[in-house]
Image 1 (cartoon, helix red, strand yellow):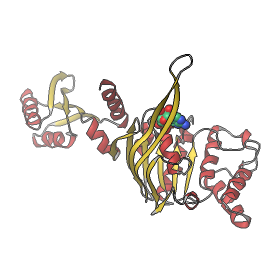
Image 2 (tube, helix red, strand yellow):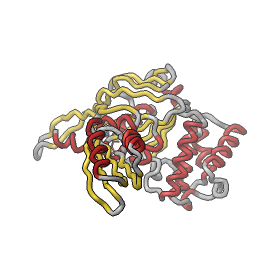
Image 3 (cartoon, rainbow, N blue to C red):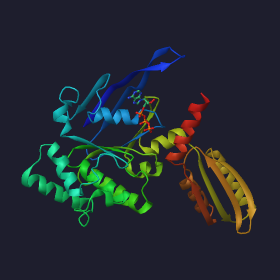
Length: 327
Ligand SMILES: Nc1ncnc2c1ncn2[C@@H]1O[C@H](COP(=O)(O)OP(=O)(O)OP(=O)(O)O)[C@@H](O)[C@H]1O
C-alpha cells in the first residue's frame, strides 16, 4: 500500500506590493493531506485548478520533497529512500511532454528504460511487450513527431510502465483525446489495475471518466482534504436528491392512494393527468424506485413509463463548488 500522512508542501514567494517593495508570502499548496492507494485499486484525486493535485502527485512520485509529513510505499519511506521508491512508482502526464519527438517509440522506450538501469535482452523485450500492450506495433519505428495525439498518449502509458511500477500516477491521461481513443485508454487503465494489479492514482477533469473508473475518490480544495469515499458515497453525501417520473394507468383514487403511501415514506409527490394515465413526479433524499414499483404492484396498477434521474459525480462537484463560493 502507498500511504501519505499529514502531507504538506509550502512555498515562499515574493509578491510585489509597490514600485520597489516586495513581501514574502506563504503558499500552502498542500496542507495536511492523508491518502492511501492499494494495489489493484484506481483512486481519483479531484479538485478545481490550483487545489494541489499536481503538487501531491509530484511528492508521491519523488519529484518534489514534502515540507513535512510522511509517504511510505509498501512500508518504505519515500523521502529516506527515494532511489528505491523510484523503481516502484511512475507518473504519466497528459499532453505531449516527456517524449523525444525525433526518436521513434522504440527508441524513446529504450532511452527511458536505460535511465531505470535496464539493458540488453531484458530492455529489448520490455520495450517490445509495452509497444504491443499499447497497440503501437505498426508505428513503433516511426518518429514520434508523426504520431497523432492518441498515439502519443499511448506511448506515454508505455513510458510510464517501463520500470514495471507497482503504483502509477496519471495526471489527466485523456486530455484532448477523441471519444473513441479516450475510451480505449480508459480500458487500458482499468486493465492495469484489475488485471495487472497496479495501484493507480488518477486526476481528471472529465468527471464521467472518474465515476466510471475510480473505486474511491479524494476531493481536495486549497490544499485540504474536503471529502473522501466511493463515488456513490460522495454523490449521496453531497447531493441527496433523486427524481423519479412515472405514468400509471388507473383511477384517481389509485393515484391518491399511491401519493399518500409515498408521502408516508418521505417522498414528495405531484400528480397530473396525461394522455396515457396519471403522471407522477417524485422527489426524495433516497432512491425510491424499488418502493414505488412495489406499491404499484401491490395495487395492481399498470406502469406505462418510468424514468429515474440520479445525481452524478459532476452534480456533486458543482454543488461543492457552489457551497465553497457561498461560504
Ligand atoms: N513552484 C511553485 N511555487 C509557488 N507556488 C506554487 C508552485 N507550484 C504550485 N504552486 C501553487 O500551489 C497551488 C497548487 O498548485 P497545483 O499545481 O498543485 O494545483 P492543481 O490542483 O494541480 O491545479 P491544476 O488543475 O490547474 O493543474 C497553486 O496555488 C499554485 O499556484
